[in-house]
Image (tube, rainbow, N blue to C red; front, side):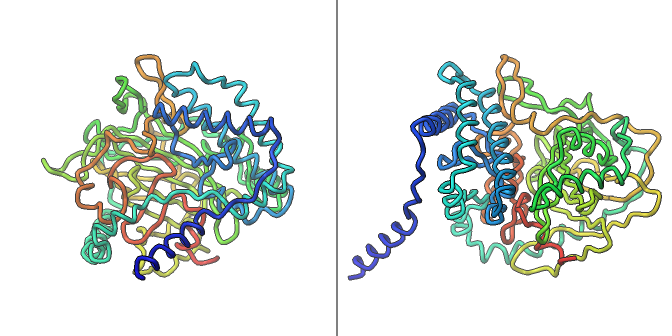
Length: 475
């Protein structure tokens, strides 16, 4: 009888998980396009060059998704919002396919130009396809969590977190104790030269114009506007420098399999993203510094190793003014959140989920640039404040973060810095051997955007679409 009950339960679960999706009537041409796109993904997966920054599903082969775009799906109620969303996710897919094709080891079997024309035709046909929109609402893409439940089960997570919580609190106190330290002679300041001559009125007009064109109030700026905005708001980075490990640089392949950071040229990698904050869509400017190593403090430092870096994310309000700054190391560790507006109030913390280190940073009058200081060795933020531009800084050059998804190698090929799981495997840390019970794969390893788990207690991803809803009260 017990076996029969188990069998019935199993079949019930199986039937629920395999509910048939509504059929979409595709033409023969559209079906052919779908087959070509799916076949292309199978080819790049076989060759080991599949990009992990965006999620791709064979159910929607001409599109690619992140957590933000998936979260928008329930709000797509008008033709205008559907068109803007479809253009966004199809463009993401186009960029991803170009990167994967560029990285492909054998391109002989790929008719890329024909494939791209096919993808555009398929996407165009989806715009007016009611069955597609119905299926999308009922069966949205499910982006895989960066937490592994099996690790938590085997690692006795409920018990492990009780032992880890005091250590986490101690580490936060250590970080805060070093905050706002006096800057000394070993600090080097880096800043963008030739800052665009923008005014807040001009920026505000950009946002007003673009949000007026959509009922979602989605700030979809032009590429030129984004370039100017990223340069205008680039912080001044002040790094305590006692070795070459403390100099931000250019990520390159020095051999066909080994990447390194060239510290002769200071680089900041830039990109943008979107978030939802209590019902509002806000734009985020991302700035990433890369260091060659995290310096070892001892012979068995579990946090030291090749590569280190910090990702800074500046969220702007609806008028294009700095609103929230948050940051993680490239492993997803050390999430810090800074409120840049007086109206923001942090939400009460919960024992169920680890809270980030959080502070208010107020902006004095006549202060035009955000200054961020990093410690030597571990590159921890130890100061954030507004100030005037420094007269003596080293020039930063900006590069698009997307270049890391396809870097040239000495043999003339192109290769992503990250593997198919979004990991930079040569950056593994010893801490992975004792932090695995918390469900994060290889803790301490540098990750690609879209793959950052930022807590050990509870679950939170850096790119969660509503991440700030849980961290701040509704202003």
